Length: 250
Image (tube, rainbow, N blue to C red; front, side, top):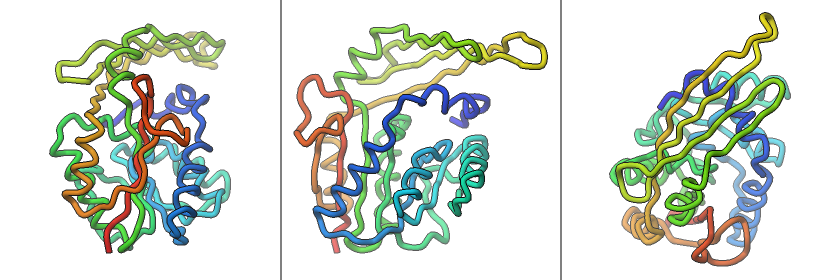
């Protein structure tokens, strides 16, 4: 998954996403569990919108993503705001390199759902564990089984604006609790007045909550909290986004 042209359309698709909720969540858990460090890795950072929000909130942020196109957009946005955020191109399943120890590592905006295989998730969690300081916090969120199995199939979802329109269809994937997303964009070319068509295919998969928690325990994390939909409550049968916070054991 490199996203290609989709990188330049991603922010339009995500313009209604409540990025401040992730910042508030990380701040709340950090304060509750006595973590005062501010070095944060935004893993699978995409176009850097959340990296920027964390930076503006006072964190010392680094962003990591597989897509060169996504990172180009992220760097341009950070530079435009005068923010010194280093961005690194790397697959989150192979996180390694000369990174310093981070106080916080997060995989936000359901980015983890783009990993199809359990082994890839394990490799990603293990990489996060290696790059966290002792006692450092690990955050991630994933789609619930309910959202993957029922809500995505309620489409199509559409947007019809003057400059950009899209049609988003989702279908059950070939693996349990997975979905294929077919996105077709029509983007106005201001020079010609014509609309360019961009097609993208995305695949997501999610797992039982117990799969994630068992993996965290196996790799040396202490589970701190599981919640849903940015509410201070445990996930219910119709929750859509599962949020997990853990700590690297010292």
